[in-house]
Amino acid sequence: MNGQDLNRLRRIISIAVKPVASNPKPKRGRPVRSTKQKERKAPAKRIGRTGKELAQFRKMLKAQRKRGVPAAELARKHGISSAYIYMLG
Image (cartoon, rainbow, N blue to C red):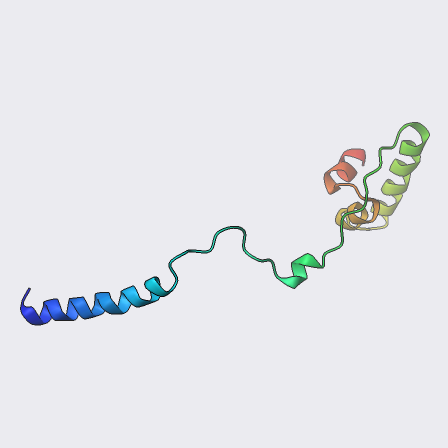
C-alpha cells in the first residue's frame, strides 16, 4: 500500500468509529412489543370436565363439527386446544 491508500483507509476507519463511539453500550433485554400484540385477549380459563359433563361436551363438539364449525374457533370459544377437539372427535 502506498501513502494515499493508507490515508484513505485511516479516513474510512475514523468515519466508522464515530457512530460506534457515540453509543458505547448496546441495548440488552427483550425487544419492545408492538401495541397490537399487547392488546390480545387472554385465553379462556381451562376447565376439567368429568363424567356426564364430558359426555355432553363431546356430543356438542361433534354436532358443531358436523355443521362445519372450524376446530380452531371451537378451541378458542371453549378454552381448549384444537388437538383436544380432534382427540374427542
